[in-house]
Length: 191
Image (tube, rainbow, N blue to C red; front, side, top):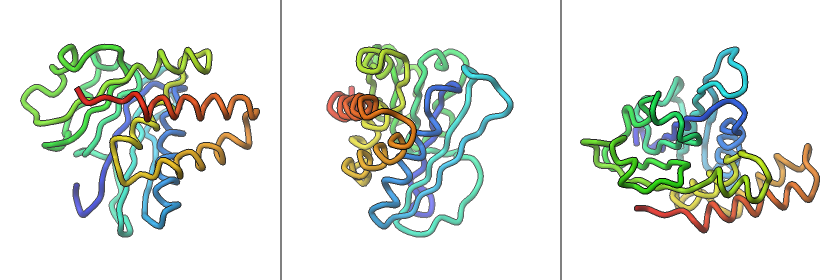
């Protein structure tokens, strides 16, 4: 952490909900009296193009601006990025790598070769396809992030998800997203 700021970099493809995941995470942190910022880096790319979302969390006001170059946590929402993007670039010693994949830690450990990091894996795509009927791993991954980062209130994550989705989704879809969130929280494993 720099300046008592916990930094998260999310690698995804456009349309997977990474920006929404960042917003829900940041708002959940703010809701308990803390400070957060989130923003995405993308250009005029179409859906499916690689993009990054950044989240900063702190007990104090955040005056830092710019991309997250030295993240405490890296979240990979799309495993196909593992072969084309150096997702672990700059990850802090003792940092966390969370990957949406059915693979084991051993199968993806090459990503942090020479780095002292914890690896968590979860099949968020499989869970989202099962519950939502499509590959939208963001709510599953937010549940996993809340479990890994103990200062993020899971109760507030649920509240923020309901607020965010309440304006555009049916109650049935909100309930399915809450189920996906819970599965992400319950099924995350450090390997």
